[in-house]
Amino acid sequence: MSDMKENQGQAWIKNQVMAQGLCTGCAACVGLCPYQKFYRDQTAIVHECDRTWGRCSAYCPRGQVDLKALRQAMFDADDLTPELGAVKGLYMTRATDLQVRKQAQHGGTVSTLVALALEERLIDVAVLADSEKKHSSRSVAVSTPSEVSAFSGSKFSVSPTVAKFNEISQGDAARIGVVATPCQALALARMQVHPQPGDEERVKKLELVIGLFCGWALSFKELSKLIKEKAGAEFIEGMDIPPSQHKIMELRTEKGIIEIPMEEVQACVRESCQYCYDLTCEFADLSVGSARSPEGWTVDRGWNQILVRTEKGQALLDLARSRGVLEFKAVPPENLEKLKAASLGKKDTCMLQLEEVSGRKDDLIYTKREAVLCQ
Ligand SMILES: Cc1cc2nc3c(=O)[nH]c(=O)nc-3n(C[C@H](O)[C@H](O)[C@H](O)COP(=O)(O)OP(=O)(O)OC[C@H]3O[C@@H](n4cnc5c(N)ncnc54)[C@H](O)[C@@H]3O)c2cc1C
Ligand code: SF4
Ligand code: SF4
Image (cartoon, rainbow, N blue to C red; front, top):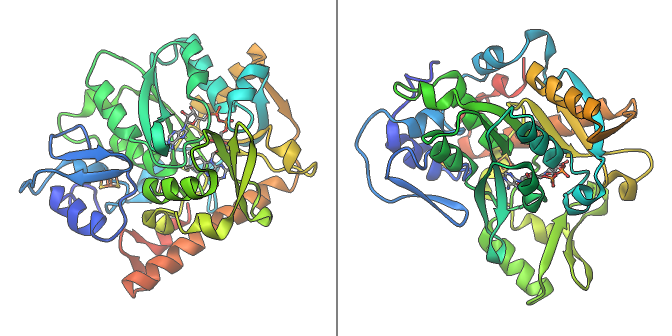
């Protein structure tokens, strides 16, 4: 199937994506025309458009997309694994700078790599996420390394990252780096590999994608309600999810940690995340998540796991090592297999959910079963 054939403009995203509960809020369809807008964590159609072709549906990660062709265009065929996409290497890293680590979600690897890419002028601008009041997120564009740490930490409601890329790629910046969740990275990959007519020069500005592992994101509305119930008016400094056997989410407040049972958190997960098959951000140069090591969670949480997927990603990681801005430690031998199993778990859950809503075994609303495994 070709991207162009399935491109049916706004009607496609309205009927086949938004109405089906598949909209991820990536905001790839925002900022290229005046007809879609992002508010809090939702993308909404504000004016109907009757065109049967559009950049909105061409780039939507829940549009019909030939994932195999996308993988072949972006990665070395020898690196492709069915479970994780392209893998050149798996590393465990953390920021050398204690201050960066202190502000980061885990080891500060992402913030360190973004700051290094800006410092070395590999990119002119980076798109990051910021927290707004009451737990919604917004996207920001940062152009100096010293600004990066202010936007460290995970925001568990979606941010309009791709809309920010759409905005700044129409301006003066020549090389743009983006920190993206898997659905956002897939939208960016669709732009990169199949830029729509007139979009070629803008899209070429995408220089680097640093992906985040992503189990799910939370609905802004439900998350706000839950936090109010558990923490009242207390200021939330951060949130984290310990390994699944702990069955809790942690809210970090000035007065200490509040633990929320996972079943209550699950009720806040965005509907579209149930239909998502990508845990490790397969369409990125590098993908970063929390580390898993035999020493246990308290040690793990200060480190990251990082999958290198492209030569560009490898070059940036090697530069970070040679500059001494990242520390490395040996990856436990079982970690790659564990990560593959976790990734397959998400793919299986997604396919089961899609089978249930579509009533079909193979043609699963926005993807074919065989395309979910990365071969
Ligand atoms: C919604 C969500 C779900 C996640 N689920 C998992 C998971 O299941 N397993 C796992 O191992 N890791 C998960 N992660 C990734 C993890 O939380 C850390 O981001 C990752 O380990 C990198 O840590 P760090 O210390 O290097 O990041 P930091 O140095 O703190 O940098 C984090 C960067 O991510 C950007 N960012 C934060 N929130 C968002 C967002 N919503 N959208 C786009 N960019 C953002 C920030 O601007 C910052 O640049 C998730 C992240 C998010 C946002
Ligand atoms: S492009 Fe993103 S925000 Fe727009 S409809 Fe598709 S999933 Fe939703
Ligand atoms: S789980 Fe998938 S759809 Fe949901 S925010 Fe993460 S990458 Fe996007």
